[in-house]
Structure formats: C-alpha cells, structure tokens
Length: 263
Length: 79
Ligand SMILES: [Zn+2]
Image 1 (cartoon, rainbow over the protein chains, first blue to last red):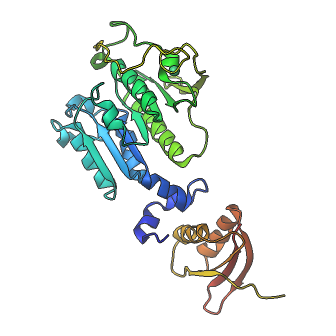
Image 2 (cartoon, rainbow over the protein chains, first blue to last red; image 1 turned 60 degrees about the vertical axis):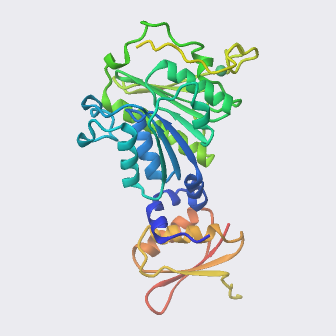
Image 3 (cartoon, protein in one colour; image 1 turned 135 degrees about the horizontal axis):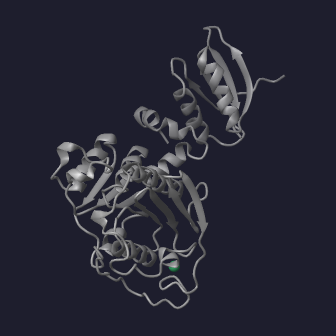
C-alpha cells in the first residue's frame, strides 16, 4: 500500500495511535456514515467525521439556517442564514476535507424514505431534535440492522447511547413509546446551552469512530447522562428488554410508524 | 556477532517529528513479523523520539549507531 504524502501528513495524529495506524485510517476512509440532522448535534458530528476522513458522509435535514441556530449549530455561519442547512453543511465539510464524498439530503426522513436512505450506509447518527423522528430512526435501524448512535440535549443536560442491533438494547428498550403530547417542552421553546450540543455531538462522533475501528467499548447497553450544571457524567446500565415493542420476544412494532408531532 | 540484514529501509533524513515515526509505522505495518527495517534518522529530536515510539508499539530496536554523515542508523525488528 502506498500512501500519498498529504494523506500521511493529514492523518498523522491518527496513524500514531496504536488503535488506529494506517489500517485503521483506511477503515475510516472506507466507512459510510449517515448523519440525521444538521443542527446542534449534527454540527460537531459532521465536522469531526469530515476532519477524521470518513470517506462517505450523508447528511439529511430539510431546514434552512436561521439566526437563532447560530448559538449552537457551529456548522453554519452568519452569511449562511436562509440557506438550506445541508448545503451549508456540505460546503463546510468539503472545506475541511476535500477528499470526501459528501451526500446532502434536503429532506426530512419519514417512513416512506428512511429505509432507502440508510441502506447505503454502515452507521447512522441521530442528531434530530424530536421524538417522532427518534423512534422512526430507532425502528428503521433495527429493521435494517444498522448501528445507530443516539444523542439528545435539553437545557444543560444531554444523553448519548449506542445501539447495535441484536447485540444490545435499543432506544425502545428504555423508552417503549414516544411521550404523550404536551408532556415535553416544545422543541422550539426549549432552552439549550449551546456548548452542551458540542459535548454530546463529539461523544457521538467518537462512538462512530470506535465502531468503525472496532476498538474500545461503545455505549452499547450504557446510557451516558450528562448534567453540565454539576458537570457530572453518569452511566446507567440498560438491559435489553424482553418486552421491548420492537426488539423484544413478541414485537408489536413490525413496521415503521410516523408518530404525531408533539410540537 | 553476525550482521543482521535489513529486509527494507527508509531514509528519513530531513523528515520532522512526528512524520518520521508515522512513516516508520506505516512501513512496519506492511512488513512481516520478525523482519528487519533499517531507518536513517537525523540527530536531535528524531533520534530522541522515534526509537522510543517504535518500542512503545512493541517492536524491538536491534541496533542504533551513528553514521558518517552525523545521522543515525537504526535497525528495528518487527513484532
Ligand atoms: Zn429494544
């Protein structure tokens, strides 16, 4: 294998790591990762995966950049206001790393398109901000047997969790159904300390890289719960629930569901 | 003592840290276990750092010697 001088220099700090090396960096280059959402979580995920050299990165979002996004969505800059988020995201990722194949999807994932979008990817990252999509993504990744790295943020808190189908619990093993309408804050009214998105998003990006490399212990069966006011990082062991509606013994969810938006 | 013959060699004179180690590591990855790699390294930081990093990866440093041009010649046995 001959490597270009630029490749060696760009990834030298990865290659030095005994868990990565030239082989591991090639695995990263051959990996295909889909990032759902180009917002608070999707921003650090996309930036770090692009910088790491993940060869194919899909990014899906149907929003346009709004002034109120810029406090935490570090992919987007002030001149991007009004542009589709995926267009702004793709441009930034290509500027960091021109060698990558970036695939923008300017659409919301739903039950009609998600299976078709995720089929080309090795790993899916959930950076969406609402319960209907979170459950849809969990279910779709379970059906397609794709590893999924979940993340969520609210106020000063965040959580992350990695789902490897049939190897560990899924999102529904923790939360069987979406919360009833009105029981959670309206997404657009929920406060979020911007930097918390950076903490959880970089945890998600790190989980993706570990999954690609096959190194370390991922957050499979462990829910990481971060409270930044205390700056506490806690882990809760999660077991696969035999009564889980999708991955349990008698599944009741056997096809994708489009839940009602609660906000 | 019989002279060990290197199976491959790398001239890393003029190559700065840490790229000299990175190139050594990439070369070792494609070699067979037990084979020998000879590396030429500059005096100063390179000779101070590269042998240590190679050892930390589990390889064996068979020999380090100063060569005529003021640089160093290091022989590594791949783990
Ligand atoms: Zn489950």
